[in-house]
Length: 163
Image (cartoon, rainbow, N blue to C red; front, side, top):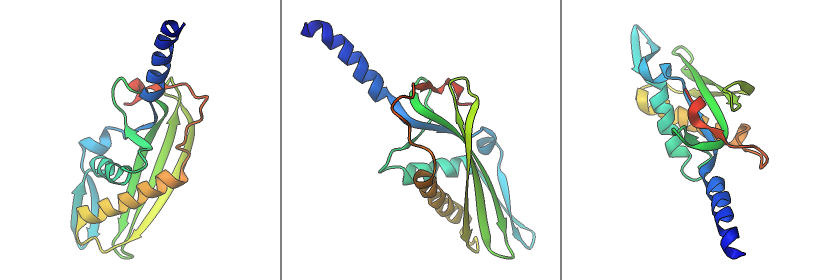
């Protein structure tokens, strides 16, 4: 009896462990092309929102491990497409990011969406550090305030839809 039950339990627990809670992806354009922040007075700063956002998630997500970047072949309970839209107002010294979250089904179709907004008052003296700090605060907000928790009855979704 035990020998018949062991393979079943092994497969059950392997699938349970391998299905991560939530995988995310950010569209390629946020990695490939530099984005510009106008600092006023004819000064511009170029940065990669995708790379900085990934770094912020890696730093802020260490304890909770709620979000993981899409990995080919991995399954998860939810897959979310993250689209950051940031701008800086140099007159008011306000850096703002509107984060659009699209939750996808197995076919890659959007089943629900959320928007999280975060504002930081900063003079943008140390550009990359200020943006990273802003994104880290936004990731904290994302983990606490969004619909990232998966329900037990959700079937795992394959990462092949992450593109």
